[in-house]
Length: 278
Image (cartoon, rainbow, N blue to C red; front, side, top):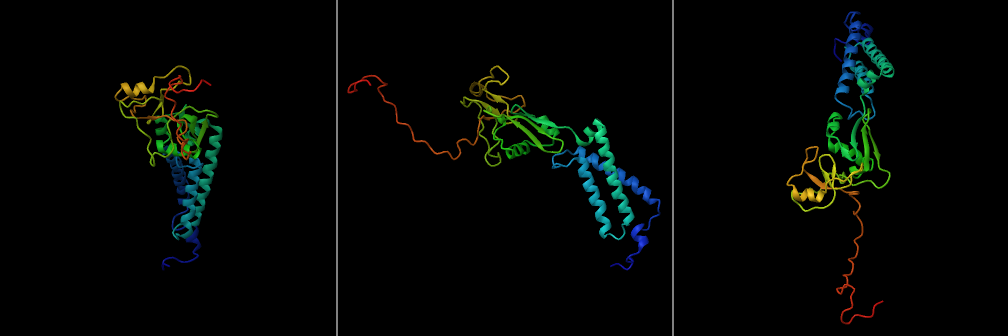
């Protein structure tokens, strides 16, 4: 222990070497830092909040910092730390009251939900606003049992950082596969000019071509699109396509079926040696 520190020096423990007016400065400094912390947490996004609002996360950080230093730094007076803790809790109560009373304050502090997926098509602009990558979204969808984007009617990134997903209850349309994870097994990419007939899903957003439009009408045939165009471009700007599927894991682990016997070559007619008709 340093010779300059006198144990149980009550004047040093409670007030330190600062004048009493410094307590008022602590009030100002704490309010500024706490409000700035709430603002920064709001601006940086809610991806990592994990069910904590920016206000709740700010009070956790503020209380932890204010309570930790006076525990082992002898130069930090106890009264200063106690005042900071009281101010942090008071500011949190005040902001919570304002959030309840004012929708504008609630929107600023808590943010608003972001719609990431609509009818099996993800929005790149919404992903940027939510500070999420496509792989982040797919990981969260897989955690909820989603195998391909066609299953998803709506997906919302909530104010607390959670993902809410509404899926088709029965017979979902085909869509962009999200399993297996693309880092482990990338989806097949249809090459320019490849003769493929069937629904195609854009690798950029999951938009479909070659299947009936759920709102009525018929979209263009994906096979013809692949055959007649060198690089078909989706509305999102991507020119990479993969076969759309209703279940990417349907055939995984299924037993192999025995090949069927070849059909009779006589086509059902009566040739030489044919028996009487049944």
